[in-house]
Image 1 (cartoon, rainbow, N blue to C red):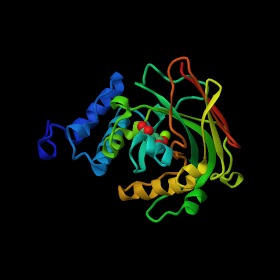
Image 2 (image 1 turned 120 degrees about the vertical axis):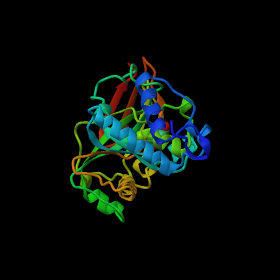
Image 3 (image 1 turned 90 degrees about the horizontal axis):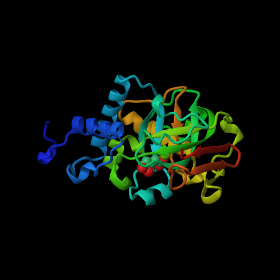
Length: 266
Ligand code: 0L1
Ligand code: MG
């Protein structure tokens, strides 16, 4: 193993391998920055890109991107105030109606998301929210089942970026609407657990408007030589704090005009 900066036993390659092993073995661990404090945002993205390459090598298809910590609710809860971008592959799709895949995840939590399907390629830098929305084909209700390879979801920005922004699985409502038909800043969501409302938010919670989150993703990806491709799915970030999804639970995200997504804990 090549030594990382200042003599840490960890480096980009070994952290990427360990994160994928934790995922495959359903095992959590302490955050890497306890042992490698130099694991910053830039290093986190190198690790994230390496784990993507390994996912593609094992046959997964790249289908889009997801944003993390785009809402104040999520930033406060996780103690990290940097929004970030991560990758979506087809292995993360949870078909509507399927339960949380408890046999694959460590400690899943569910959060409501406004989801875009892209009609056109979007490439930064300098993309505005309005330009970003013009590239969107349809808007969908969604929910992300996040999972973290870190004990108790405790991490720094570098750790969580390396861990593909706590990716697990995601569900989208099949029927989308054209972006012109919905005011996304005002689009509200109610989160219910076992039929009880536990949280709510509007799309404005996500960077003022989810289109701003999409622009942020395009501009951030451009700094690393990537664009958002036509046909890709974009998860714009959890609107509220995430709720636990143990076996036996039932979580519903009811949106004002986008419809509802329901997930059973299994
Ligand atoms: O574990 C986490 O909450 C980090 C990922 C954030 C996902 C999101 O904000 O949508
Ligand atoms: Mg999310």
